[in-house]
Length: 172
Length: 86
Image (cartoon, rainbow over all chains, first blue to last red; front, side, top):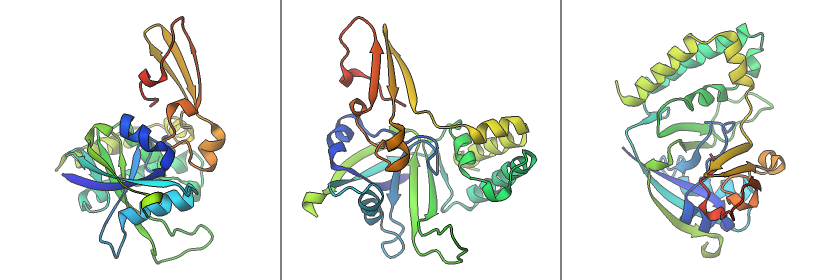
């Protein structure tokens, strides 16, 4: 299976990434330790390139940015976006971990799914793919998802078969 | 079922057999910000900046030599020859 993802970063990291590859983020990121990419669902739903660019400009607050396009090839993946059997199994895992959370005397409202992704670190998988609601608002409940993102968390960088610098702040 | 499904099934069994204290340890575990790497007779310690770690994500993709690095050993150490931190 082939996956294509976009990664936004600060321009100062271009040489390092091209020479040595990516450094993984630590395990308290939303899908745990790994290298994160944005995938395009369809440009009207979520454009991977634009999401990567927005992330580096507005979250990392970098005016000098760069976007890489990577190709991952693997059959060792978990797909919580489009594989219904994976989603069903994930729900069973979440139910078990919620039970443990309550038995430990914690409030269910304080449960963080990151605990499941932390445990996934023990699995032998190359990547996880999931849809994230980037418009999530903590202050009130909302039924609508206004900004879906299709994200890929690469656990094993060996599955990155191609990595190309596609755009920088200079060429925009 | 496919490879990913079987891996998730393993994870379900892991949670089904987990004790409450094991869960608490997993839930409260903090990500490593310090790494100790042994390269031949060098001991290399790398510490990521907690400030950047929490505030602006700048630890991501940060070249290894921009973080705090100490080492012990009696040879000259080339940072370019270091293995990656995680």
